Image (tube, rainbow, N blue to C red; front, side):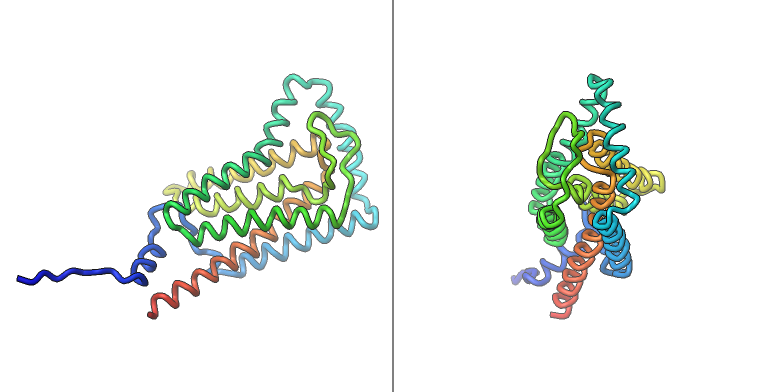
Length: 247
């Protein structure tokens, strides 16, 4: 008696993994509609360019920068017992929190062999860190002299914390929203991600770790980088998947 055994080829195994949507996976929206990523890149890039130009020509927005960098730290120093832990939480969430969450999701993607999502995370976060170092050192804007509590000396334009928050928490919202069954759940994920980004940015301005335009520039560059990188990675894996199917 002969028994027929079905043996899946390596190509078929890869195809099944690509089609597995049971875990936290990218919905592929940016690959299907790359115009979204292009608009994100253009919007963020133009906004960043406008803020940089304002800085170079000492434009009117710098008045808001100086006013807030004086007024907000003064408020913080009046009530440090309550406000300092909150502001420190924003600093660590945008720093070590981003790193830890990225590592945990990276481990998850490796364990599940979700290479597309791992590539999006690695290129997105790794590129964001490199981009921040290059831009901040090239522009070389000195941080406000009124910094309180956690004092930083490295250049501050754009804000690395806000860049990282957009790249990471925007990415997580992009992954999680399609998993939500209800409109309330989808809205909750989006609102929560936005609130986290805004909270991190607010704490940076409140403690005068950054000027307001540093933080807005960080958001702008985070949007531009996310739109470009995540779209390109998705397009690459979509083409790769199509090639595998044809074999």
